[in-house]
Length: 528
Ligand SMILES: Nc1ncnc2c1ncn2[C@@H]1O[C@H](COP(=O)(O)OP(=O)(O)O)[C@@H](O)[C@H]1O
Ligand SMILES: [Mg+2]
Image (cartoon, rainbow, N blue to C red; front, side, top):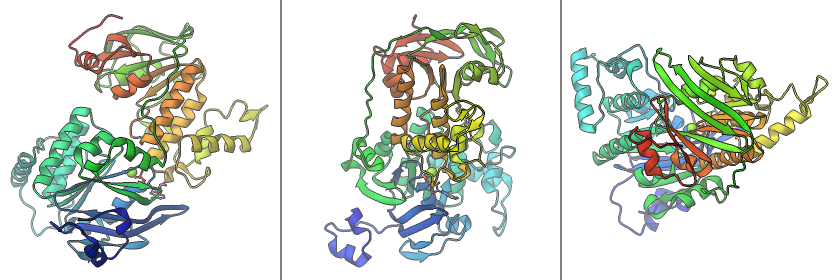
């Protein structure tokens, strides 16, 4: 079977003539020459895709490369401007997700589409009312349990969606597709929201499905997952498929280079840390979570200027509350927060911003951007009151544009122009706009919650570089991350949060993953 990219433009009979190995099966799906234009953007440029039964195809590419668009074309959410789709060798027209479902194609979108106030079973049969008859709920639940067991997708059909974790909700989305008989499953960045354990579990579920002859297109930025889950990889860049590789014959470094179009450094050069004065100090801080339960139980630490303190921990151990207490978004019930030696405990967010604090929130789309404003204005939003963007009350549109242009280049933000409204950008690119703004506007303390989450390798590298630049410029950085490699690479010290307490603070230079892992599980406490 020959599936090199230089052959994908040829007609099937030419490919057959050129094939050196005997074919074991024919593709279950082929997309040929798919082109999709949006105003000012060529989202897909003659993109090809082939998928074989029992195969996981990883679709890899930077934010904005056109992966989601290509899959939205496949499930009938977008009409392509050019190109053809074949399922089991038959040319098909897909006008809606319903058409796609009838062909056995289903997609789990980046943002789940479940109704929180309904049960798992209700969500699964929702929208299936066009069937000749709707079975009774008990029968539906029985069928769901059968599928759950077969694929190891553990969920209670009678649970309400709002009661489920993100990982469980994702299982419901997958179950929903399987219930409807999907043979081809498209998972759009399914692990961006999962813990490492949940991602691992998803890998097992995928394996189970492909053992049964189903196929999957798996979109991700994470190289380890590509290497672990897929048999083939297609790399997209600027709307085009730039490489087709057999997973066993490639490696993360090569894939990263193909994605970004240049060499990517996984290991960043780090200067020696030269700590200055204490910028942030927490003294015995307590706080509650949204349900009124204790979330922080006596957190104390300091961060100096010129230093990055990493916060490690399994999500839900107080990270969110910690960030919110520091940035004024949540009240501390006890203890003190000092910024540059001044008591800033429970001050409103605007006061905190004025004391030189920047915040990259975990929920970037919800908290960080104005959808109906231009990219340039979103970038300038924080700095527009100060020089150089304003002097003596006069705004300088040219300087705003220059700043925006610089950030667009530095962070590789895929936008047609700096004036494009941010709502037209892909999710990853909206994130980059907010990151660029917060990092650029930082004056004393940068609180970064999961800054590289959901970003591609090129953007991740840019973000990490910028965090190190801030540190080298003498600022204090609080870096909350679920990626231990990231913490070990760029933090100077790493504090581990477990059940709202600091289990210990280790120098990053001597910390190892195993010790950190034990501390994250609450098994080992280490003094500073
Ligand atoms: N509905 C849309 N309207 C306008 N532009 C869009 C739309 N959807 C995607 N785009 C643009 O198409 C390009 C590809 O986006 P997308 O397919 O979401 O990329 P990826 O999934 O690889 O991150 C981006 O530049 C994005 O801004
Ligand atoms: Mg996408």
